[in-house]
Structure formats: structure tokens, C-alpha cells
Image (cartoon, rainbow, N blue to C red; front, side):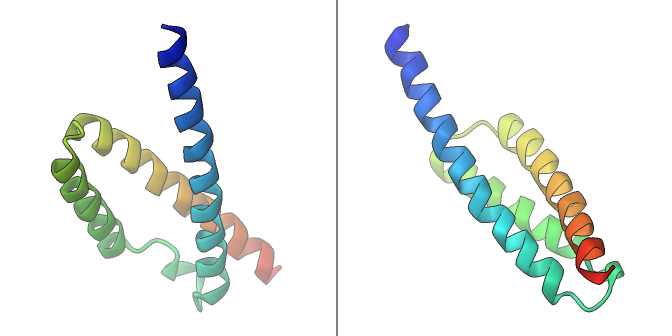
Length: 90
């Protein structure tokens, strides 16, 4: 069990590193978008979710995990982008 937990901990650290990179892209998007209304893009959200579901199927990841995780990730990313957008405009 110790080896399993060590492996999970290593994956978690890598995921956090990747989330930091993803957050930097959200910051860039917030700076680029011309108005606050452009922050929430439902077409793009569905595009992201669709691509992630396809990747999950290719990699044998349960869709129940991917759907829940990416829905939360995308919504948190949108909220973060709104925060950055507001901060850079005020």
C-alpha cells in the first residue's frame, strides 16, 4: 500500500504542476478577451469537455471521473478568469 500511496502522491504533484500551467493560460485568456462577457464561452466549454471525454475513452479512464473532474475544473477556471479579468481592468 505504501508504494501505491507514493505513486498517487507523485501523480498529485504532477497534476498540480500542470494546473499551474493551465492557470497561466487562463490568465493570458483573461488579458486577451476584450470584454467580461467573453470570459464565459459555453461553446468552448463544451469543446473542452468533448475533447477530454474522447481522450478518456482512448486511455480507458472512466467517464464518470473525467466528467465530474473536468466540469469542476472548467467552472473553477472560468471563475478564476473572471477574477483575473476584473483585476486587470480595475
